[in-house]
Length: 132
Image: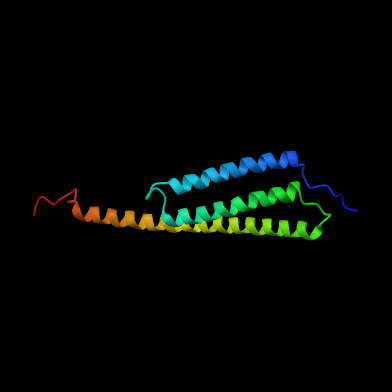
């Protein structure tokens, strides 16, 4: 028979969850308060979405660790399936953020190359033929 106790004690889970929520909320507020142009809009949208998903995952995982027991296996299973789904979504957004960063890097590199080529066209050659 499975014990009816939760996975972790409530006195440990709740303070950790509260600290994580406060930190995550602070990050979300900081993202929102960023001036325009500091962070590309696509990156800001991706990180805002992952922050909101984390804000839902933290209390759900705290419930799963500190409150849910095997006395109600259906609820226990649903809570952990939702937590796993949210974490999977967060990881997918992290991958999307990495791909987006590569895209932004490529775009910036192409812009710098074009700017460099333009500056080369505008400058005089260093060694000019003096006979001409």
